[in-house]
Length: 290
Image 1 (cartoon, helix red, strand yellow):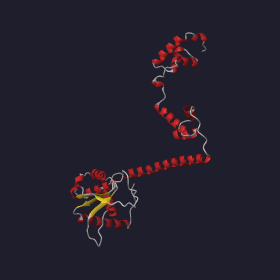
Image 2: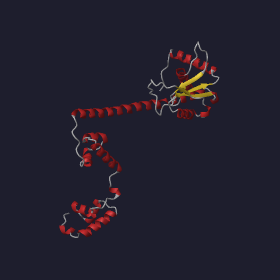
Image 3: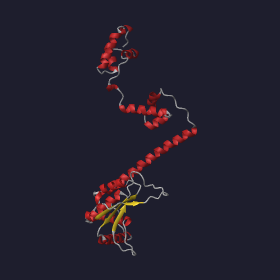
Image 4: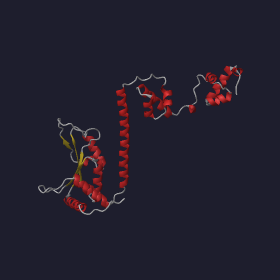
């Protein structure tokens, strides 16, 4: 409904009412309807200097997108590139960054390199997602292990990573060495299955001398649930300055050696079981169950 200009003659009184309503928490639309002010310019003047109530503000997520869009624009990205990065509309981007200077036109070669890099980053992300999904599906497919399954896994694990008796060196010791904490945990679960008492185990850390020796000792002791004082003296590997080591950083903890005392009989059982697995694998093998 149209209103005459006389409706707004007492501007100051109207402004006082508008400000009071604003401070009560009303939105612009509610104030407009309450005061019957249909002219946006006049409504702007009535509310000049009065901040909007909190509930009318944009969600915080939108504000974060706006700030990120402005950062990317200042880095020289186009609307299309910002849209790819943030997944929001170009119309919103235009409103958020319109006060910023336009980026300089890039050299076509540089533009092509940037586009290629973005595509490659996307491809790597897709590949990594697929890789992680395959690992998770395989992990979930294992389910629970039966005692027999754990026994067979342990035999194969030991024969791959443990010390073995030689015709020229009859020792029949049970000694397992590995740097993978998962392998250590499975091996210890296997020894427990075979009723090897914890008192028969001896632990030794093997690590390069210029690594975090104390941290490694603490890590392995926590993993196997043993007191560090019960560990044998750590074996330090001499550092060769001509060698560039790749096993460095916080995740490098050397290897853990686990020896079973009085293990000759256990060793014979391991070797015999391994021979049995070889015989079975080279003969008829049944189908895998789901």
